[in-house]
Length: 284
Length: 190
Image (cartoon, rainbow over all chains, first blue to last red; front, side, top):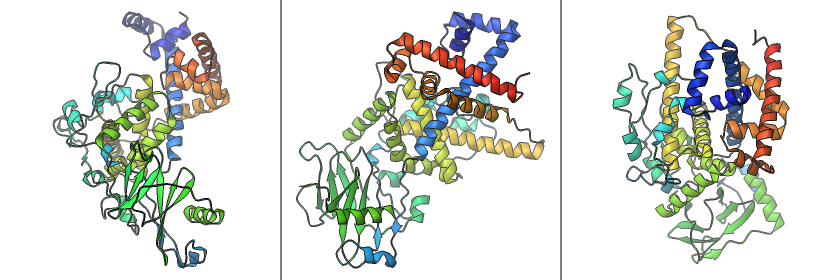
């Protein structure tokens, strides 16, 4: 094995225990080798940082649920789709409370290939997280593995008390998230900013075999059937003389008839004039 | 807005998301990011963090999750959200701790800032850009995602693992040369 490969395998933990021990001894007695290893280590750290930055940049471009409501002014009423004026359009982003970590059932586990079970806590140790600058020996631990298995919401107790002066870290109450109440007043920073004008409650059924892309209004709610967990969807609520609701999903717009109590297939709007206006509103 | 999806569906989705991330599907990561954005950022914001800090912590946590899932070393014993949430908690706690220590150091001793590491990272990022996309991807897949040569060959469309190995070797050599030149110019090397 060449020196290049040896250093590479050493730094990427691909050496056997024996090989690693031998290499460590060699490092102690060979300053030139140590300098080469240090250089390689900094290069590998650089590659990792660049990749992490790349992924973060990608995430920065992802639209996120802000809970904000787009306000339309009276000046825009002339261009209204259906009539006199547009009061507001509320954009909802899909959020699935069933996936919020449950206090009662956080043991919804799946394991891979029968490998040895590890706790999430083990995976977050500083030495295995390249993004951490904090030295492992000074890193406080939030939850014990036992707590980890039951819920992510436990407040640090025994472990954190070992710290001389642990920073205070209250754990967020997710109850409102669990109820799926995105716009509950005072439930978060985001919702405090929002002025809620939409009244459309939405339920989705993503696994219905009979109705693959349908909707209905029932009990004052909008029910969407189809793969609405795959992409973000938006509900555009237009208030004018006639109240109208539109769905935006996968680059298409759909008119949702609020009187439609039967499960109906979603048909994309093809009226170019209407589409133009909807796009204009949505873009504002 | 009340959304209710049956438990079994959500678990199925979780599994699917995890598998897609294991296979390097960045769209699945984006989906995950958007899905839990409010929940994760709220934890930071309600613990003295700003929205920017919350976003940063959440993104860092997802990057850790991505790396672990991709390397095949991660075995999920909880839901993805539970796991990512615990990473967010740890990262934010460490950040608070770091801030606190930094603040104490400012009071007690003259501040010593090590500008070396960020500078080096910048240089390496610049050199990676000069390498071209194929080399950049091969090196990132190998060193960050920790993919096997077989996976790299499959992903990059190389004929076999030998081709992937040779490519990785040459790309790394090229990067080393570029970095050494840059380091010399910046007087990082004696």
